[in-house]
Amino acid sequence: MSMSRAKGAIPGVTGAAKTDFAVLLPYRAGPSGAAQSLLFSRWMTSAQPWVLVSLLGIALLWPVTAMAQSNYSLTQATDALWRWMPFLVVGGFSQNILISFMTMAIGTLGGVLLGLWQVSKLTPLRRFAWFITQLFRNSPWLVLLFIVMLAFPFEIKIGSTIIAIPDWMKAVFGLSLPIMANISEIVRGAIQSVPTGQWEAAESLAYSRSQTMWRIILPQCFKRMIPPWMNWYAILTMATPLVSLLGVEEIVTLSRQAMEAEDNHPELLMPFYGFALVIFFAYCYPIARITIALERKFQVKL
Amino acid sequence: MLEAFQTFFRELADTYPKWNFIFFYDPSQWDRVISGLWVTIQLSVVCVILSVLIGVGGAWLQGSPLRLVRNFVAGYIQFFRNTPPLIQLLFFYFALGQFTPTYSPDGWLEVPIISNVGWAIISLSFFAGAFNVEIFRSGIESVPESTIEAAESLGMSRLQIYIYVVMPLAFRVSLPALNNNLVNLVKTTTQALAIAVPELLYEMVSIYNDYSTAQNASMLVLFVVYIVLVGILVLGMNRWERSMKIPGYGS
Image (cartoon, rainbow over all chains, first blue to last red; front, side, top):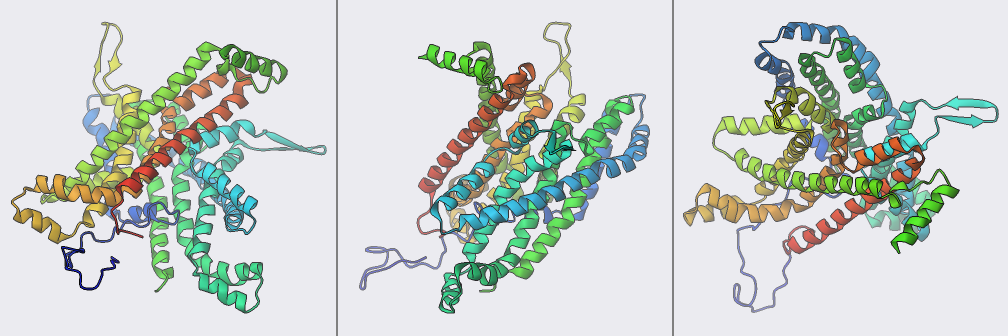
């Protein structure tokens, strides 16, 4: 707390009273508005291993209590899940991972470009990059997905060759828009977090602006950008089931098909959706752990 | 004025069949858009209020002396924040919805007591509420022990301390994070489409399913409407944040 007090003032009367009691302690949830905050990963890593076990437990035990009288038993349902599991993982979840990888690749390329533009000296370019970033950061993912899925052609003609774009690829474009905007914010934040002294020092050594950026600023930013970047990867992976709403084949779509193939017994819902919940958790949890560990390792020492 | 507006879009649709803003000149389609927007706003408002209540209540329960209660809250948070909200919605509506009792309004139909809108509200509120509990807990942690002891020495009960001393301070501190989460919640309401809640996205999608020429137009309007909605929310929240700021706290 900074408080300028006139000399000779009486504490508590003409100025603020001097006290040992802090009014408020620092808020520890991290910088909330900043794109760099690792809220998601931090929350996820605070989960204990028993969470995974209890998630599985809830998914499996509920039907036992609720549907004890039905003739389609729980063992049959779990057997069905067991039979379909390789199919769900190989055909479904691997597709989710593929989508998340591709989206991250495209989103990172676009995001780095936008982020660099956001700190550009050219005002129109900076404004434009800021506008695009805010536009895609603040629109719902599902709306963007729908727009891209419908607006994109299903094939492109280059000369006489026709290149078909599979619908999962279109989903990748749709998801990469919000990712791009968020990564742009990460890049901008990381560049601005480098003290201005660095810029001035580089300038005094006669580095040009782009040299300063590429040789001095960005190498320092890189380490700082890795944890929030991975944080967004985990968030993205959690968002990939959205593409099932547009008919793209992935774990939720395939779970539904598998349940249909098993005659749509309501008892199947719990194990199948429960399995989807658990597999996402199992995949994202280690990523979140590594993110937090890296953040600790790369922490700027002041 | 309205006539000219309608004629303009009707002519636009005639000249450029790909840009058929049907809802701007067909009153029945316009009603669909408005009803969708209304459902989105209602859904957002109800979920925001419920999730804040869940957050406040959960954060209070987390400070409970009973270990069982604390563990229960911890389990709830872990379940909701570590799984995709879409799967939560499907899980609630299709899996849990199977087991809710039904009633008969007319003696013939069997209607479950919780409709799809009900499940969307429950699922989304609990989803955002789990984050809110954590946000409020961090806020509560920033209230020093000495302040609580001071309140205790004045003979306040645990609930009184929570309502009159801790929460007013903690709320201000956690407001930025809370705002972020609430904006995110409003964006997540679009996912209620998965269980056929007739909100804006659902209505827009069904309009272009009915009129394929309206595809570009409905997507454009949908995008603009959401940008405006979220923009208003973000601006409002920022103003609120500024007016609730604790002087001298934070940077």
